[in-house]
Image (cartoon, rainbow, N blue to C red; front, side, top):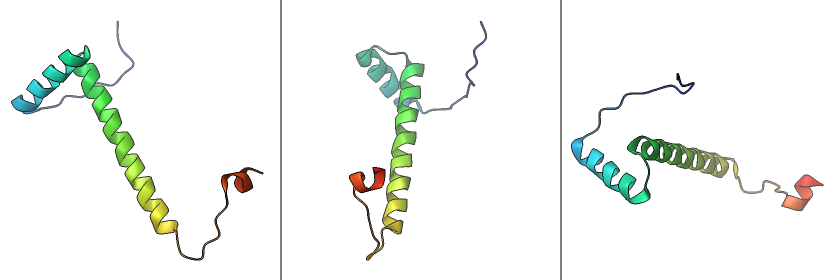
Length: 73
């Protein structure tokens, strides 16, 4: 049955494959499922770092800020 998910090919060093195999075995996941999970986690972290950097750049002294309650009322 065809999948709607797009496939990618990766060339990975043997020691990293061995680490993935071990972790997949410990967590009872497939190597593919584990790799997908790790990629998603890495993308989430990158997004968080980017948004944090952006917030810090926008946070200028003297800028009025609103509390959570003030913003949503």
